[in-house]
Length: 196
Ligand SMILES: [Zn+2]
Ligand SMILES: [Zn+2]
Image (cartoon, rainbow, N blue to C red; front, side, top):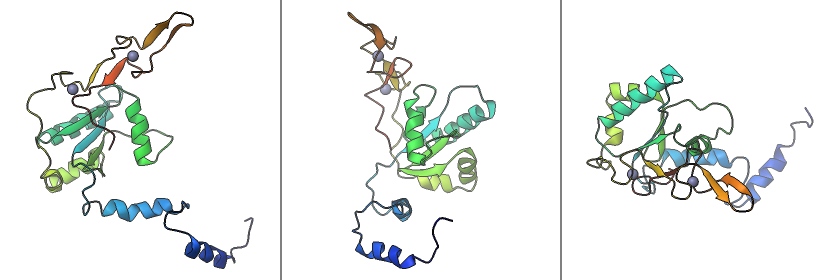
């Protein structure tokens, strides 16, 4: 209640004078129709990306992740599975995509062709009504066999620190290795892809 709400005319002036590239608060709303029309312009590589956890700490979450992965694997299309328990960088990535800077992100989260599809409930529902099949239609098939470089783990041991995530520096002693994640792992260069 700082200002009276009778100043709409000034807002309109801003609307007319602003260039299309200007960054206003409303830019987030502009993104919505663009996301909806993504089918028209195939700029994103079409693939399935699943953010999940392989930790059994939270049982329902673990079960949801397993169920969703097995549903998706049933279609035999190429799936980029991103295990948050392997790399906390995936959590940051996911929070950025969903626009949630804080709070817990529920897992799993599924993206198909660069579009957010949903979590466990959505995937199960779409699968039941046959819609999921349509979404993955035309996607590249799953690679036969497992990746030679990482054995299907999608991560390899860091060369710099040999997986210890620590480096010994003559003068200052041990410091964290900057080449790898908190587990001393780096994403497999042969089979891991860039963020969405
Ligand atoms: Zn690999
Ligand atoms: Zn390292």
